[in-house]
Image 1 (cartoon, rainbow, N blue to C red):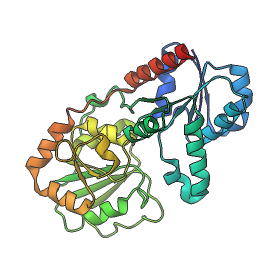
Image 2 (image 1 turned 60 degrees about the vertical axis):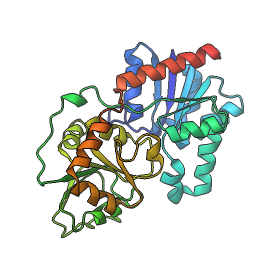
Image 3 (image 1 turned 90 degrees about the vertical axis):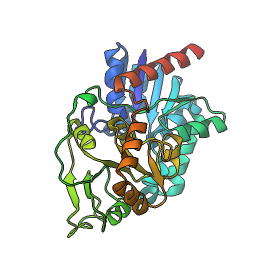
Image 4 (image 1 turned 120 degrees about the vertical axis):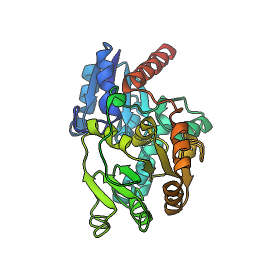
Length: 317
């Protein structure tokens, strides 16, 4: 199979690998030809398309608007599969304009031949709109279970990994630990608006950017893992689940994957939820036991799922 991918990657082998760093590697390992167009190569997309002659074109992110327009104009003939992952209106709307980002996102969803998504929420939306859609989750590295926990100080360790910003509600998490008998560990890139917010707080520790290969060790060392975004397809949600620890999250789209008081504590009030978990060891253990029963796949297994979908859509073409 000849698979062309146009996404927002700037590197094929970055320090932190996301969905469209892992999957092309396994596609090639399985013997498929892959042409992966990086962000800095977008201007060559149509030339690359004509030269490569893909069987299927996979798009990811706002750039998908371009192949969608070309497909509508019949300049692109390959099957167009759009992998609908992030909420680009939320992510880029403030910087690039809400209307423009909504146009890019929903024009692509409407006009792609097929949609794939790691979000149950987006899967349900596509079903509602009669779009041909496949649910394909995120995965975790194959050596995740082999990683041993690091040593973190504190009686109750609370951990958050990812973008440290108001958009991700991390300011609310920092406020939530004030006066609580726990230690909050933050790992990730800090936005300027939150830089120094925890200055003087002895129970907040900034770890900086952790190498991806080391992240499972920190997740396993924590007592509580926190999801601050209203998002059911963030990569770290799958990593948190795989770590098998008590999860605190925002009530909303997470409910499509996790169940309150069964395998997570989902709340509208992070401070209240955190206080409940910090003070209730039995509940933390029950939630950890519950989340261990949620199936999480490796990236190799996810790649196999994706290839089966591509084979199916090619048979139906």
